[in-house]
Amino acid sequence: MSRPPTFAPPPRARVYRLETARGGFAVVDAPAATERVRGTALLLPGYTGSKEDFGPLHEILNAAGYRTVAVDGRGQHESAGPKDDQSAYAQAELAADVHAQAAALGTPLHLLGHSLGGQIARAAVLDDHTPFRSLTLMSSGPAEISAAQQERVRLLGSVLGEIDMAEVWEAVQAFEAQEEGEPGVDEGVLDPGPGRQQPEAADPDRFRRRWLLTSPAQLLATGQQLCTEPDRVGELARVPLPLHVISGATDGIWPVPLLDEMALRLGARRTIVPGADHSPNTDRPKPTATALAAFWDEVDPYEGDEAHSYEEKG
Image (cartoon, rainbow, N blue to C red; front, side, top):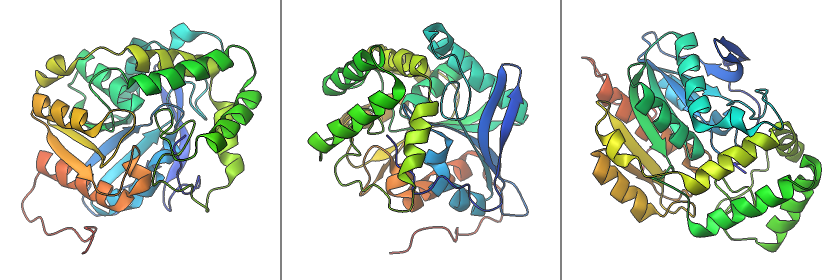
């Protein structure tokens, strides 16, 4: 799973239920720390993830003038969803949720999706791009995940159908111990991945709690989506939105050369974060946030810009 350093919200952020026409969604809403708000970003987590995965990015982006709203999707962590109805998690349903969230926030948004969240964001944009100022795909590929990762997702799906979530959690932990050093499913559901350390600051029980709150039907449905997603890059390339593809320097879910090729096909801005794997948001948050803010600044420039103080030195 994705490994945020803490589940505590950043200072000044609000954690609340965002009420929409399609129900309520748990969000972390962090305001801009500047007199002028440059924009608002909606952040969608990936498979087995949650709104807390973007925790390390908020303060840096807020200092750059951006309000950041990270959301638990339907059936993720603290956003309730059916436990046994996979149809509730069809991609079209999840994309419609994104549009409802955008409408509730009431302002044009910079949309960012991590991994599975990127494919949901893409579906939302293809349905209707007008609520959005830009789209960033973070460690999210053009189509289905790699064959090795598909096998892992199917393995997870097979046990989800046989035992309860607490027993699955114990099985996953045992599998991690055996597979140490190998990249896991999406955000690392079976292993944090090479070069990625499990943070000491986060309470391990919070990861277990997040897992237990996640709907098994959501995992089954979205896992199937990850294994069968078609290539829709050509469709997305025709959408009149600024696009950004950002990833770590390595990725076991979608190989980095595949992400490079996708960015070329999209005519998108391309950022590779050195030293990061599948989750640059938690692996290397400072350069990741710097790259995001620089992209959004180009989308909505205004006179009098000065060099950002949040840029990483050296």
